[in-house]
Image (cartoon, rainbow, N blue to C red; front, side):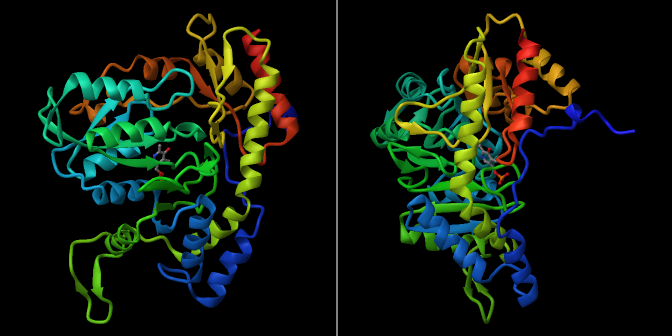
Length: 389
Ligand SMILES: *Cc1c(COP(=O)(O)O)cnc(C)c1O
């Protein structure tokens, strides 16, 4: 017995490995260069820096490690506070805790779901006091040291507005670009203008190395420090003299080989993601109470995770829609529990986050693998329309 073909599973987002991945990985195995140094690591770092328009790129074991190192390089200290959007995958908030510091959760704006500069300004003006160049959260008595601008769901955060606020209040800004490789802001790649930006190559990201990450910076000293800290802070590689307690956050040559092959395909991946988003947007344009997240006029989203948003007056819930699609083997996913509600971060301060709550209540991400066929795309469109009819 065979399953009805129309019920073959359609995954949310799976890796597309149809390029030179196998060839380059095979080269590692044939030459024996499989571990934490090798030509592909160096090449991946160089080509990645070029691709995002940054001077330096440092390969790492994953995106969370890149955020951890970025926060340390930004000078975040124990018991300080770092502004993090409430709506995001949990990694940036966890990385703040790895430094012994605390996230302060603020809301996103309702249109593109990015950290809201107005909420940041309100927090800094109303909830903080300034003592000289130091900003202190009045409710927690903690110094606010930095802000993590997360480029959420493939769309750039407004780092122009957020950067102005950081400059005015003496905060460091770190860009979490893990979801948005290939996106542009005002024509420039995300990460290009950041002092410190983190990327991820987890299995469901724009490009994947199985697991992996990258820190980019324009500052040669920060780049050298990042390499040092992620390679066990080795001062003398012959005598094994270590000048500090470092980390083993290295990416292997095997993974970097995949990364080089994936990076070759990035423009095609972004183009396909955007075409999938456009197809959904067009197909649902006539439906009331539904929109597909788009992009600001200054942005070109990489459309990492194509996401449908029901409006809060819809009688249909995202849970019903997800169940209807699951019944025909179409995988979907809601957004993350907003972090101001996360048991993992119960000790953190947060501002009011109604937009994060609404997004979690009403958003559902749709299948958007870059190798999604037009047939499968049409099946998803058909079943979403049937569910919402
Ligand atoms: C995926 C992701 C990360 C971390 O990436 P890993 O490589 O899985 O550690 C960090 N921040 C955000 C917003 C992410 O979506």
